[in-house]
Image: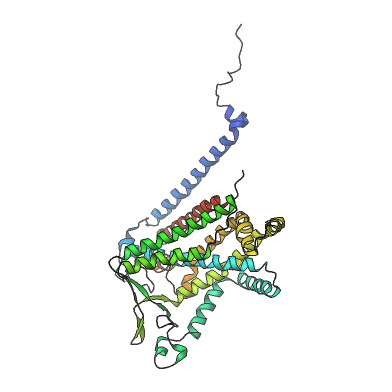
Length: 404
Protein backbone atom coordinates (compact mmCIF):
# COMPACT_ATOMS: atom_id res chain seq x y z
CA UNK A 1 0.00 0.00 0.00
CA UNK A 2 1.19 3.50 -0.79
CA UNK A 3 1.29 6.02 2.03
CA UNK A 4 1.35 9.82 1.97
CA UNK A 5 4.70 10.91 3.30
CA UNK A 6 5.60 14.30 4.74
CA UNK A 7 7.62 16.59 2.49
CA UNK A 8 11.37 16.47 2.95
CA UNK A 9 12.65 18.85 5.57
CA UNK A 10 14.58 20.89 3.00
CA UNK A 11 11.73 21.26 0.47
CA UNK A 12 9.49 24.34 0.14
CA UNK A 13 5.72 24.38 -0.42
CA UNK A 14 3.36 27.32 -1.05
CA UNK A 15 1.35 26.47 2.04
CA UNK A 16 4.39 27.33 4.10
CA UNK A 17 3.90 31.01 3.19
CA UNK A 18 0.87 31.05 5.49
CA UNK A 19 1.47 28.22 7.90
CA UNK A 20 5.17 28.66 8.57
CA UNK A 21 5.96 31.50 10.99
CA UNK A 22 9.29 32.05 9.23
CA UNK A 23 7.55 33.29 6.06
CA UNK A 24 4.12 34.44 7.24
CA UNK A 25 5.12 38.04 8.05
CA UNK A 26 6.80 38.44 4.64
CA UNK A 27 3.67 37.11 2.94
CA UNK A 28 1.42 39.65 4.64
CA UNK A 29 3.85 42.48 3.90
CA UNK A 30 3.95 41.50 0.22
CA UNK A 31 0.16 41.39 0.04
CA UNK A 32 -0.07 44.81 1.70
CA UNK A 33 2.45 46.20 -0.79
CA UNK A 34 0.45 44.87 -3.74
CA UNK A 35 -2.75 46.38 -2.34
CA UNK A 36 -1.03 49.73 -1.82
CA UNK A 37 0.27 49.76 -5.39
CA UNK A 38 -3.18 48.92 -6.72
CA UNK A 39 -4.73 51.71 -4.64
CA UNK A 40 -2.29 54.31 -5.98
CA UNK A 41 -2.78 52.99 -9.52
CA UNK A 42 -6.53 53.36 -9.14
CA UNK A 43 -6.20 56.92 -7.83
CA UNK A 44 -3.82 57.83 -10.66
CA UNK A 45 -6.11 56.32 -13.29
CA UNK A 46 -9.10 58.10 -11.79
CA UNK A 47 -7.22 61.42 -11.84
CA UNK A 48 -6.20 61.05 -15.48
CA UNK A 49 -9.73 60.01 -16.48
CA UNK A 50 -11.27 63.04 -14.76
CA UNK A 51 -8.73 65.38 -16.32
CA UNK A 52 -9.40 63.91 -19.76
CA UNK A 53 -13.17 64.27 -19.34
CA UNK A 54 -12.64 67.92 -18.36
CA UNK A 55 -10.48 68.52 -21.41
CA UNK A 56 -7.29 68.91 -19.36
CA UNK A 57 -3.98 67.11 -19.64
CA UNK A 58 -0.76 66.93 -17.60
CA UNK A 59 1.94 68.92 -19.37
CA UNK A 60 5.14 70.63 -18.26
CA UNK A 61 5.65 72.64 -21.46
CA UNK A 62 4.86 75.80 -19.49
CA UNK A 63 8.26 75.53 -17.82
CA UNK A 64 9.89 76.56 -21.10
CA UNK A 65 7.71 79.66 -21.56
CA UNK A 66 8.79 83.18 -20.51
CA UNK A 67 7.92 83.88 -16.89
CA UNK A 68 7.06 87.54 -17.38
CA UNK A 69 7.71 88.64 -13.78
CA UNK A 70 10.66 89.92 -11.78
CA UNK A 71 12.23 88.39 -8.67
CA UNK A 72 13.71 90.80 -6.14
CA UNK A 73 16.38 88.49 -4.65
CA UNK A 74 18.36 86.20 -6.95
CA UNK A 75 21.55 84.18 -6.66
CA UNK A 76 21.82 83.61 -10.41
CA UNK A 77 21.10 85.79 -13.43
CA UNK A 78 17.39 86.21 -14.03
CA UNK A 79 15.15 88.60 -15.96
CA UNK A 80 11.42 88.78 -16.60
CA UNK A 81 12.04 87.14 -19.98
CA UNK A 82 13.60 84.06 -18.40
CA UNK A 83 11.61 80.85 -18.41
CA UNK A 84 9.36 79.56 -15.66
CA UNK A 85 11.93 76.83 -15.11
CA UNK A 86 14.59 79.48 -14.47
CA UNK A 87 12.26 81.19 -12.03
CA UNK A 88 11.70 77.88 -10.24
CA UNK A 89 15.47 77.34 -9.98
CA UNK A 90 15.84 80.83 -8.48
CA UNK A 91 13.14 79.94 -5.96
CA UNK A 92 14.88 76.67 -5.08
CA UNK A 93 18.20 78.45 -4.48
CA UNK A 94 16.52 81.12 -2.35
CA UNK A 95 14.84 78.41 -0.27
CA UNK A 96 18.09 76.50 0.19
CA UNK A 97 19.91 79.72 1.11
CA UNK A 98 17.57 80.68 3.94
CA UNK A 99 17.33 77.04 5.13
CA UNK A 100 21.13 76.67 5.24
CA UNK A 101 21.70 79.97 7.04
CA UNK A 102 18.81 79.29 9.40
CA UNK A 103 20.02 75.81 10.38
CA UNK A 104 23.50 77.11 11.20
CA UNK A 105 22.30 80.06 13.30
CA UNK A 106 19.57 78.05 15.02
CA UNK A 107 22.11 75.37 15.98
CA UNK A 108 24.58 77.87 17.44
CA UNK A 109 21.91 79.74 19.41
CA UNK A 110 20.08 76.57 20.45
CA UNK A 111 23.19 74.82 21.80
CA UNK A 112 24.27 77.94 23.72
CA UNK A 113 20.82 78.51 25.21
CA UNK A 114 20.40 74.82 26.06
CA UNK A 115 23.68 74.74 27.97
CA UNK A 116 22.97 78.05 29.72
CA UNK A 117 19.57 76.80 30.84
CA UNK A 118 21.47 74.45 33.13
CA UNK A 119 23.82 77.17 34.41
CA UNK A 120 24.44 77.53 38.14
CA UNK A 121 23.75 81.26 37.76
CA UNK A 122 20.07 81.80 38.64
CA UNK A 123 19.70 84.98 36.56
CA UNK A 124 21.20 83.43 33.42
CA UNK A 125 19.08 80.32 33.84
CA UNK A 126 15.87 82.32 34.19
CA UNK A 127 16.66 84.59 31.23
CA UNK A 128 17.22 81.57 29.00
CA UNK A 129 13.97 80.04 30.22
CA UNK A 130 12.11 83.25 29.34
CA UNK A 131 13.66 83.22 25.87
CA UNK A 132 12.59 79.63 25.25
CA UNK A 133 9.04 80.11 26.51
CA UNK A 134 8.47 83.33 24.58
CA UNK A 135 9.83 82.28 21.22
CA UNK A 136 8.48 78.74 21.03
CA UNK A 137 4.95 79.68 22.12
CA UNK A 138 4.40 82.42 19.52
CA UNK A 139 3.78 81.33 15.88
CA UNK A 140 6.82 81.76 13.67
CA UNK A 141 4.79 83.84 11.18
CA UNK A 142 4.24 86.46 13.89
CA UNK A 143 7.98 86.65 14.55
CA UNK A 144 8.67 87.04 10.84
CA UNK A 145 6.25 89.97 10.61
CA UNK A 146 7.55 91.56 13.84
CA UNK A 147 11.20 91.45 12.78
CA UNK A 148 10.32 92.75 9.32
CA UNK A 149 8.36 95.64 10.85
CA UNK A 150 11.27 96.48 13.17
CA UNK A 151 13.70 96.59 10.26
CA UNK A 152 11.46 98.93 8.28
CA UNK A 153 10.63 101.22 11.21
CA UNK A 154 13.98 101.41 13.02
CA UNK A 155 16.71 101.16 10.39
CA UNK A 156 17.50 104.27 8.32
CA UNK A 157 16.78 104.57 4.62
CA UNK A 158 19.65 104.98 2.13
CA UNK A 159 18.90 108.71 1.79
CA UNK A 160 19.66 109.11 5.51
CA UNK A 161 23.29 108.14 4.90
CA UNK A 162 24.00 111.59 3.50
CA UNK A 163 25.49 114.38 5.56
CA UNK A 164 27.17 114.20 8.93
CA UNK A 165 24.54 112.26 10.87
CA UNK A 166 26.58 109.75 12.91
CA UNK A 167 23.59 107.48 13.54
CA UNK A 168 23.21 106.88 9.82
CA UNK A 169 26.87 106.26 8.95
CA UNK A 170 28.22 103.06 7.48
CA UNK A 171 29.82 100.54 9.83
CA UNK A 172 33.61 100.47 9.27
CA UNK A 173 32.96 102.27 6.01
CA UNK A 174 31.96 98.96 4.40
CA UNK A 175 28.63 97.82 5.88
CA UNK A 176 25.28 99.56 5.59
CA UNK A 177 22.17 98.47 7.47
CA UNK A 178 19.13 100.12 5.94
CA UNK A 179 15.37 99.66 5.86
CA UNK A 180 15.70 98.26 2.35
CA UNK A 181 18.29 95.67 3.26
CA UNK A 182 21.87 95.06 4.30
CA UNK A 183 24.89 95.91 2.17
CA UNK A 184 28.27 94.25 2.66
CA UNK A 185 31.57 94.04 0.70
CA UNK A 186 31.62 91.50 -2.12
CA UNK A 187 34.80 89.51 -2.89
CA UNK A 188 36.27 89.95 -6.36
CA UNK A 189 38.33 86.95 -7.46
CA UNK A 190 41.28 87.53 -9.76
CA UNK A 191 43.90 85.23 -11.29
CA UNK A 192 45.39 82.97 -8.63
CA UNK A 193 42.44 83.30 -6.28
CA UNK A 194 41.63 79.61 -6.73
CA UNK A 195 44.87 78.71 -4.94
CA UNK A 196 43.94 80.90 -1.98
CA UNK A 197 40.47 79.39 -1.78
CA UNK A 198 41.90 75.87 -1.99
CA UNK A 199 44.37 76.61 0.81
CA UNK A 200 41.58 78.05 2.94
CA UNK A 201 39.40 74.96 2.45
CA UNK A 202 42.38 72.74 3.21
CA UNK A 203 42.92 74.72 6.42
CA UNK A 204 39.36 73.99 7.53
CA UNK A 205 39.90 70.28 6.87
CA UNK A 206 43.19 70.53 8.77
CA UNK A 207 41.43 72.00 11.81
CA UNK A 208 39.08 69.03 12.03
CA UNK A 209 41.97 66.61 11.53
CA UNK A 210 44.04 68.31 14.24
CA UNK A 211 41.17 68.35 16.73
CA UNK A 212 40.44 64.69 16.06
CA UNK A 213 44.11 63.90 16.63
CA UNK A 214 44.07 65.87 19.90
CA UNK A 215 40.96 64.04 21.07
CA UNK A 216 42.45 60.67 20.17
CA UNK A 217 45.66 61.54 22.02
CA UNK A 218 43.63 62.47 25.10
CA UNK A 219 41.56 59.29 25.05
CA UNK A 220 44.39 56.88 24.17
CA UNK A 221 47.39 58.32 26.00
CA UNK A 222 45.90 60.86 28.40
CA UNK A 223 47.91 63.60 26.66
CA UNK A 224 46.20 67.00 26.75
CA UNK A 225 46.99 68.98 23.59
CA UNK A 226 45.77 72.62 23.41
CA UNK A 227 43.39 73.11 20.46
CA UNK A 228 42.14 76.71 20.56
CA UNK A 229 45.12 78.74 19.43
CA UNK A 230 46.52 76.08 17.08
CA UNK A 231 43.10 75.93 15.41
CA UNK A 232 43.06 79.72 15.04
CA UNK A 233 46.54 79.59 13.54
CA UNK A 234 45.61 76.85 11.07
CA UNK A 235 42.52 78.82 10.08
CA UNK A 236 44.28 82.13 9.33
CA UNK A 237 48.01 81.68 8.72
CA UNK A 238 48.07 79.40 5.62
CA UNK A 239 45.36 81.39 3.82
CA UNK A 240 47.03 84.73 4.60
CA UNK A 241 50.41 83.46 3.39
CA UNK A 242 48.84 82.13 0.18
CA UNK A 243 47.02 85.45 -0.28
CA UNK A 244 50.25 87.47 -0.26
CA UNK A 245 52.31 84.88 -2.13
CA UNK A 246 49.81 84.90 -5.00
CA UNK A 247 49.92 88.70 -5.16
CA UNK A 248 46.66 89.48 -3.30
CA UNK A 249 44.35 88.18 -6.04
CA UNK A 250 41.18 88.69 -3.99
CA UNK A 251 39.86 92.23 -3.55
CA UNK A 252 36.67 93.69 -2.13
CA UNK A 253 33.91 95.56 -3.94
CA UNK A 254 32.65 98.02 -1.32
CA UNK A 255 29.07 99.33 -1.45
CA UNK A 256 28.81 103.07 -2.04
CA UNK A 257 25.90 105.49 -2.06
CA UNK A 258 25.11 106.57 -5.60
CA UNK A 259 21.98 108.64 -6.07
CA UNK A 260 19.20 107.40 -3.82
CA UNK A 261 20.56 103.90 -3.19
CA UNK A 262 23.73 101.93 -2.62
CA UNK A 263 25.57 100.29 -5.50
CA UNK A 264 28.11 97.48 -5.45
CA UNK A 265 28.86 94.89 -2.81
CA UNK A 266 26.49 92.17 -1.65
CA UNK A 267 22.88 93.14 -1.09
CA UNK A 268 20.60 91.12 1.19
CA UNK A 269 17.02 92.30 1.26
CA UNK A 270 15.38 92.96 4.60
CA UNK A 271 12.88 90.20 3.77
CA UNK A 272 15.71 87.65 3.63
CA UNK A 273 17.23 88.90 6.90
CA UNK A 274 13.86 88.97 8.67
CA UNK A 275 12.99 85.46 7.52
CA UNK A 276 16.45 84.17 8.43
CA UNK A 277 16.44 85.69 11.91
CA UNK A 278 12.85 84.68 12.69
CA UNK A 279 13.30 81.06 11.64
CA UNK A 280 16.60 80.87 13.52
CA UNK A 281 15.49 82.24 16.87
CA UNK A 282 12.18 80.35 16.70
CA UNK A 283 13.79 76.99 15.91
CA UNK A 284 16.64 77.64 18.36
CA UNK A 285 14.11 77.63 21.22
CA UNK A 286 13.15 74.04 20.38
CA UNK A 287 16.77 72.99 19.81
CA UNK A 288 17.67 74.43 23.24
CA UNK A 289 15.13 72.12 24.88
CA UNK A 290 16.54 69.17 22.93
CA UNK A 291 20.05 70.04 24.10
CA UNK A 292 18.90 70.45 27.70
CA UNK A 293 17.14 67.09 27.59
CA UNK A 294 20.21 65.42 26.12
CA UNK A 295 22.49 66.83 28.82
CA UNK A 296 20.09 65.82 31.60
CA UNK A 297 19.97 62.30 30.13
CA UNK A 298 23.66 61.85 30.96
CA UNK A 299 24.18 60.40 34.42
CA UNK A 300 25.40 62.91 36.98
CA UNK A 301 28.00 60.38 38.01
CA UNK A 302 29.77 60.97 34.69
CA UNK A 303 30.26 64.64 35.58
CA UNK A 304 31.39 63.83 39.10
CA UNK A 305 33.87 61.21 37.85
CA UNK A 306 35.33 63.66 35.34
CA UNK A 307 35.60 66.38 37.98
CA UNK A 308 37.39 63.97 40.32
CA UNK A 309 40.07 63.59 37.63
CA UNK A 310 40.69 67.33 37.71
CA UNK A 311 38.95 68.30 34.46
CA UNK A 312 37.62 71.83 34.23
CA UNK A 313 33.85 72.35 33.74
CA UNK A 314 34.31 73.40 30.11
CA UNK A 315 36.25 70.26 29.24
CA UNK A 316 33.79 68.10 31.14
CA UNK A 317 31.01 69.47 28.97
CA UNK A 318 32.96 69.11 25.70
CA UNK A 319 34.65 65.76 26.35
CA UNK A 320 32.28 63.87 28.62
CA UNK A 321 28.73 65.24 28.64
CA UNK A 322 28.03 66.43 25.08
CA UNK A 323 29.44 63.33 23.31
CA UNK A 324 27.05 61.16 25.32
CA UNK A 325 24.18 63.63 25.00
CA UNK A 326 24.39 63.66 21.20
CA UNK A 327 22.63 60.30 20.94
CA UNK A 328 19.60 61.98 22.53
CA UNK A 329 19.99 65.35 20.78
CA UNK A 330 20.52 64.34 17.14
CA UNK A 331 17.20 62.54 16.35
CA UNK A 332 14.94 65.47 17.40
CA UNK A 333 17.46 67.90 15.91
CA UNK A 334 16.81 66.35 12.50
CA UNK A 335 13.11 67.10 12.92
CA UNK A 336 13.87 70.72 13.80
CA UNK A 337 15.98 71.14 10.66
CA UNK A 338 13.14 69.72 8.60
CA UNK A 339 10.63 72.03 10.28
CA UNK A 340 12.82 75.06 9.62
CA UNK A 341 13.16 74.16 5.95
CA UNK A 342 9.41 73.69 5.55
CA UNK A 343 8.61 76.84 7.54
CA UNK A 344 10.64 78.81 5.00
CA UNK A 345 7.55 78.54 2.77
CA UNK A 346 6.15 81.43 4.86
CA UNK A 347 8.61 83.70 3.05
CA UNK A 348 5.88 85.11 0.82
CA UNK A 349 4.48 86.93 3.89
CA UNK A 350 7.39 89.40 3.72
CA UNK A 351 7.91 89.32 -0.05
CA UNK A 352 10.88 86.96 -0.15
CA UNK A 353 10.58 84.91 -3.33
CA UNK A 354 11.30 81.31 -2.45
CA UNK A 355 10.04 78.29 -4.39
CA UNK A 356 6.55 78.62 -2.92
CA UNK A 357 6.40 82.22 -4.08
CA UNK A 358 7.69 81.55 -7.60
CA UNK A 359 6.58 78.10 -8.75
CA UNK A 360 3.75 77.71 -6.25
CA UNK A 361 2.64 81.34 -6.48
CA UNK A 362 3.07 83.52 -9.54
CA UNK A 363 3.86 80.72 -12.02
CA UNK A 364 0.86 78.68 -10.85
CA UNK A 365 -1.49 81.67 -11.13
CA UNK A 366 -0.22 82.72 -14.55
CA UNK A 367 -0.26 79.29 -16.18
CA UNK A 368 -3.14 77.66 -14.32
CA UNK A 369 -1.08 74.47 -14.04
CA UNK A 370 -1.97 73.79 -10.42
CA UNK A 371 -1.44 70.03 -10.46
CA UNK A 372 1.96 70.22 -12.15
CA UNK A 373 3.19 73.09 -9.96
CA UNK A 374 2.02 71.52 -6.70
CA UNK A 375 3.53 68.17 -7.69
CA UNK A 376 6.91 69.81 -8.33
CA UNK A 377 6.65 71.64 -5.00
CA UNK A 378 5.95 68.38 -3.17
CA UNK A 379 8.82 66.67 -5.01
CA UNK A 380 11.29 69.39 -4.02
CA UNK A 381 10.37 69.50 -0.35
CA UNK A 382 10.40 65.71 -0.23
CA UNK A 383 13.84 65.59 -1.85
CA UNK A 384 15.38 68.22 0.42
CA UNK A 385 13.83 66.62 3.53
CA UNK A 386 15.19 63.20 2.59
CA UNK A 387 18.61 64.72 1.89
CA UNK A 388 18.71 66.45 5.29
CA UNK A 389 17.60 63.26 7.03
CA UNK A 390 20.22 61.17 5.20
CA UNK A 391 23.08 63.57 6.03
CA UNK A 392 22.09 63.88 9.68
CA UNK A 393 21.62 60.11 10.02
CA UNK A 394 25.14 59.58 8.72
CA UNK A 395 26.40 62.06 11.32
CA UNK A 396 24.30 60.39 14.00
CA UNK A 397 25.87 57.02 13.21
CA UNK A 398 29.33 58.58 13.35
CA UNK A 399 28.91 60.14 16.81
CA UNK A 400 26.80 57.52 18.54
CA UNK A 401 28.32 55.51 21.35
CA UNK A 402 29.94 52.32 20.15
CA UNK A 403 29.95 49.26 22.36
CA UNK A 404 33.27 47.54 22.90
